[in-house]
Image 1: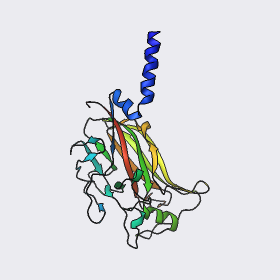
Image 2 (image 1 turned 180 degrees about the vertical axis):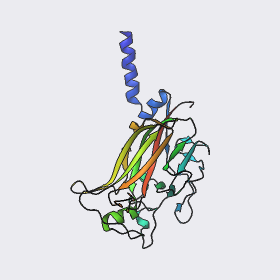
Image 3 (image 1 turned 90 degrees about the horizontal axis):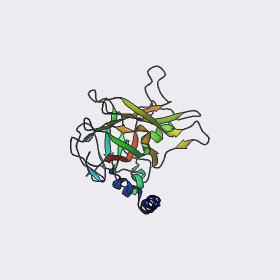
Image 4 (image 1 turned 90 degrees about the vertical axis):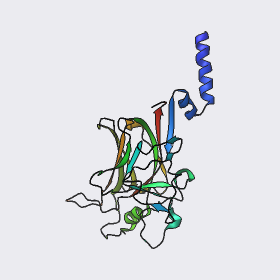
Length: 249
């Protein structure tokens, strides 16, 4: 009887706590990379500086030292749809702000880096944390190409029935082995009416498991049939990337 009473009391305690509090009690520390503490230049974005140099910063509830985490192929921006003008700017998100009303977010794109030729987030060597979720959204230049066939290079075509623009998140463990993949369709013309991710979408990434690295692959059905090169601008926005780590790890 006492045993059952103890279990019941534990259940009541857990019900009265938030999910994050429960995780804390179990020795799991949730933390979120928010990009909010990044001081942006007057242009409203910081291009490449965080992409190739692995600069550390405080991400939500967890402080990263410079060598704890690195980012490849992205810029930090606070430019939302209110910043749209006649100039080409790839760092404008199609939403009205960052995720959950925040200011800053990241815009991933092809890093053009022969030494680190992937889009992604890299934890320190040997470190693995459980990835939880992230918010994703289309950027304005990608949306223009999808809806109107407008892009700076003049190669894009407006999407028709059956077209789609996807981002695939790929997890890797500390040994470099792939853990799993999650594909997020940010523009899907395979359905009627077409679905466009014009606001932040929360995506569950738990199936990637314990990861040391997350890579992102951008794909579009508007591409070169011989080389597979995408004609749709390979930009997408991401914010509030959430992990869980064991206390003391």
